[in-house]
Amino acid sequence: MKYIKCLERISFLNLGWIEIWDYSKANSCEEARIEAANNISGTVFEKYKANNPLKRYEQSKNEAVFNSANRPLEFIPMLFTKQEFFNNINFIECNKTFNETIKFITLSDDFVLTNLRNILKYDKSNNTNFSNNYNEIIDGYIVFKLNIPMFLRDQIITHTQLSKVNKSNRVGKQNDTYYLPNDILCKYNSEHKDNYVIKDLDSLIDRFVNELSPNSVKDLLKSLGYNKEIWTRWPNQMKYGVMSLGGWIQDRNGFKNLLLERSAIPEQWKNWTQVETKNVCINIKDLIDKYYPELFDKYILK
Image (cartoon, one colour):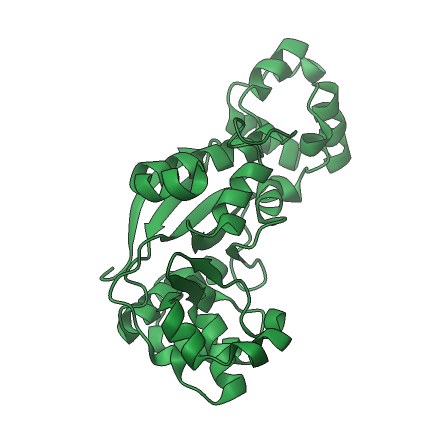
């Protein structure tokens, strides 16, 4: 890719992974916007190389203008100076319908941080063309792609103002890979369930999927001592699914709030969190710290 890039992928929870993406040039030109939007649309369709990237982008653009649920353009960051933003955008009028028009803007130092979808909505309502503004480079906007069990995906997206897009099983292929805790083989075989010794995790998953009923698997997981967050999720919520998260490090309602909610910064806030969910967020935190240490120290740790 020419304008955006994956900085790193780490393995996570057996078959899962977490990627951190650099979107600092996603709003540098129209070609960059097309590339960035198609990368996010690929999460939904599970097809990252569109046959016609421009057409897919224009569809997202038109749908975004009309306030549809399609959100790839939220992942294209836009940065304005405060003077530029408030001198040109009718903030008083905008404020009357704030949640409908310019959602989730962030004020940071001398700048207004927002995204292309928000500005397109404003342009449509006010017959303006602020969406024609580009930024050669933007510091602090990042995207994560995660392939994680669906019950973790649902927990991650709850109570967050980060932009998020999930893989769609309606338009993409159904994923038939399942998550089970790492210690389940030891627990299962030590209990000699059904006098059936399992040698590897794939064989156990095959038995759960093809030989036992869903309720039997739930009862077995419960008997092995797993909490409700695990045994009630079988089978569908245990399948892996891909999602994208995007936001500004400078936005304390974004990544900062996610990490606090999920106990990834225990020195600042502690509450009960499902261990797998907490570990997802710890990995997100560590990747932000690794690639954006100054912003991490200023906006996440403080």
